Length: 219
Picture 1 (cartoon, rainbow, N blue to C red):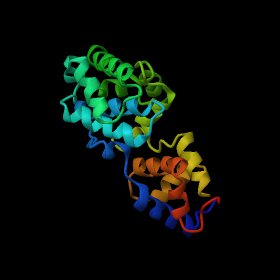
Picture 2: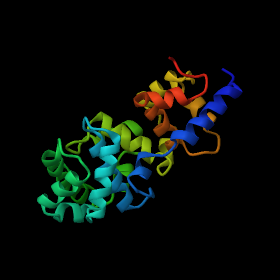
Picture 3: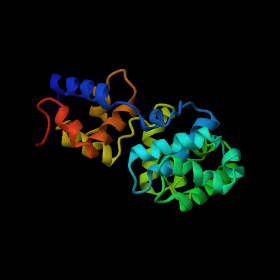
């Protein structure tokens, strides 16, 4: 299938409008180092609940501002402080259960991976399905949370690329882009893939964004 120029222009427009990753919104500068990888796990857990992405990213920022940036600092933080940070981020519906899960996740990263989630990548054998399975071993991270983590980390763990899950492909289909991972990656050109994945996910939840894309809305 030949890629049309209109597809290329649409992807460029979509990236300009919505190509900010959820990690960026949570003030995480992703690198292949222990601290940002743990912070992404925290964000993925927060985004796994039935709560808006805006609230989840705000809650993540509050947790990081409160000092819960590493497995040790999260595990050692008084539970009341973790709950208070979640509440400041308006993550009030699941604050107590989430505080418990965050602390358990931190303890698991410390015990299973010696505080470094690069060990998860190594243990997976650089296989996306196995990485997803290992992520789902964390209480509070199900298939949705695992996919969020993998979508966001793919430009850091480049062996994952292009990682465009069904949610991202649904977004592509909604604006009449090809539902094909390789074609979508080629449309991004030299740009990173994680911002495109995030933008396509936003298409599925933001009708105003769909309507802003010239001539491509399903409406």
